[in-house]
Length: 262
Image 1 (tube, helix red, strand yellow):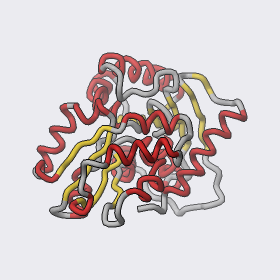
Image 2 (image 1 turned 60 degrees about the vertical axis):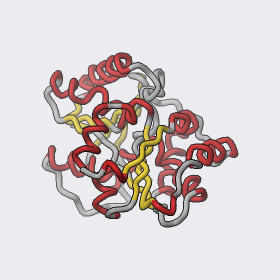
Image 3 (image 1 turned 180 degrees about the vertical axis):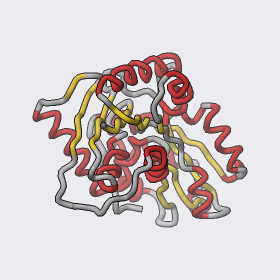
């Protein structure tokens, strides 16, 4: 049986990219809802329907678990999906606790989509961490659009980020939480803007640890020569076109480069 990774677009490839490395013996399905991306600026009711439709489709593919590799979809829909479907469903959330645990009593900037930033789930997460006075929230919706166009280093991206970051004194910050899986593609561009004291934190590792726990998986001996078995779908359509597969591969190659940036 396969493990499914679901996202509104190609951001969730960053979670799959990590899974390929640590679970090379598994078979994977990646589902990007390219017909409806982005989720983060849409009404919550629409997002809930998009996620439910995707789950209905994924369950026809003999999957043993679904990783919702999308912070927005997790915030809006995971609770409802767990009530409706009887299989392990692993969500994502901004890694606020991890940032506080790693870097102590310095400020943390949490970046995400508007739905995530304004949702009740992130408020509860901040309250649970217990250091709300150290946490700032920033929505960066255009990064999703930029990433879907494979536009990572352009002048438009840099200008957008500089404008969004301008209100913050980053000498006071320990870290920036990448609370949307699309944001992982921009680590080099962000690194060129922010001082070195600001470290990147994301929820990918924690999500995969929870996946392994739920499925009782162990880390195998890594075989770097093993080719992963992955099926790709865009909004229910299996991807076989060489141009689309090349596009996906280009994203994965970029993630190879981003992996070493912290």
